[in-house]
Amino acid sequence: MPDFAFPPSAATTLPVAGSSSLFPVGRVFCIGRNYRWAPDETRPTHMPAWFMKPASAVVPAQGVLPYPAQTSDFCHEIELVVAIGRGGRDLAPERVEAEHIWGYAAGLDMTRRDLQQQAKQAGGPWEPAKAFDQSAPCTPIVPAAVCGHPRQGAIWLTVNGQDRQRADLAGLLWTVPELVAMLSRSVTLAPGDLVYTGTPAGVGPLQPGDAVRAGVQGIGELSMAVGAGPSAISPI
Image (cartoon, rainbow, N blue to C red; front, side, top):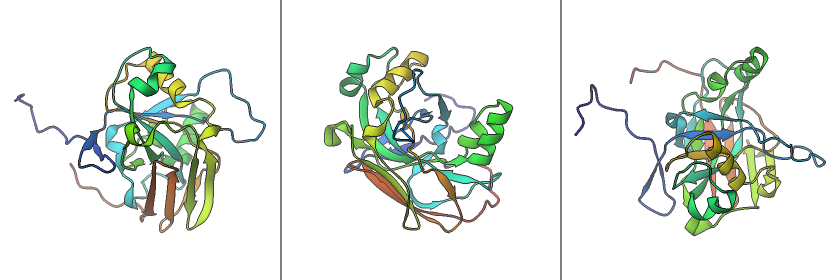
């Protein structure tokens, strides 16, 4: 056993759907705008921007979604999540599905939108807006051997029973294999990495007490309640 200076933090894991197994979460990559938000929108010539969240931001998508500190504009973004099972660098898009994707999930990329706007105006990093505690709720991982590789199907989110986001995976500007291959040109991917693949139109704010339901057809659904504002947090 290594002689750690102090006990290491517990590993972040997600349940595997229909199994007692756990998926060990590594890094979390998030893709920027990657859906057609207008019927006549065409695919850009450049690949989308991406950013990261810490593994500790990932939590099971159930129960209470805490309203975070330092914001008055707490926004939802429903996304298809890709779970990497085999890593590598400079991956070929045509081999990504068969050789590198372990499974899929539905996830929320929660955002402190006011902090994001401030970062954009100042040309600063997005971490304060994106990489906060519990900002990446995620459903259980469904193995690709069970669900296949979804290329179409509904992706949706409601707040208090009212539609906020509703689209189809076929509306992705850049496909999952293209996104994974793109990331692998910038960083060596590893087993356990998650890729949040972008959100459709309709993102919006949440308030304490809101009931959020969301899902990706054939992959998973989530139901969470937005909690009250921040309270004191004990040291870890």
